[in-house]
Image (cartoon, rainbow, N blue to C red):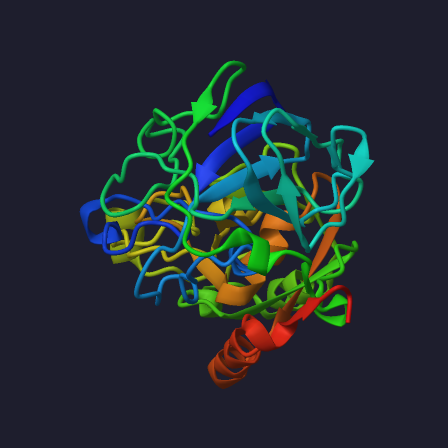
Length: 340
């Protein structure tokens, strides 16, 4: 068990998210940087979830720590790992190495500072954090107030149970992720996308602008949607009358509210593209200029307010190849012992 002494800016319980709920209007939630959470679970010997939205299981729940500031006391001995943004964490007064596992003893305190690069850190523990399942997931949906720890971010005094140990933690000690595989959290970010279903209704000049401009993430970005600040994008003229009658005069409106998968980039009125994130609505009625490929949603989740992002167009085949390449490095072959 762990006791929360300081909750940080926003810390929530997250796993890989709930599958199958979008048809019912329930978003998946889950870790915004699922790659970092999966590696954290790998380092402490927890079972993997598989890739986002095509997984066969959700894996063990960890803590998503936005920008840092978390302080928790261990009740019992636990094997933990911290991945994602570096918060310069300490166990009592001893610095710990990120992207590796560490033994925290009964009564010891884990303290996370504030990250300077990257927006979210992930804390995994052998056995996972044990909160009730909601639609087969332990992930927190903040605006819906369900899942996770009473459907909310952690507060001072909260006590988090830990699941049954899944292996001998003494045998798992001193595991680290290979240094050359650790992501670099640097701005400007390059985020790869495939073309969206309504890309054709934007002018050619606006399409070129979308892919060449360095967009700044808005301070309004959250787990529902990541908003980007930049120039207005224009739409082609000559909209048919039936579209105006059914969808309205705004050219960004489309007649039918289609499904909106995670990563969909909508541009309401051509102003400030919004990347729909893990807690986003499951449908949307605005023109979709592009869709972020699944593995780059981790980059979206690690972008800090006002950092720059460039969107890069790739094909569906390239997106699949990139996913396969990432899957190959979330394995025991990517783990080393004692830094070897």
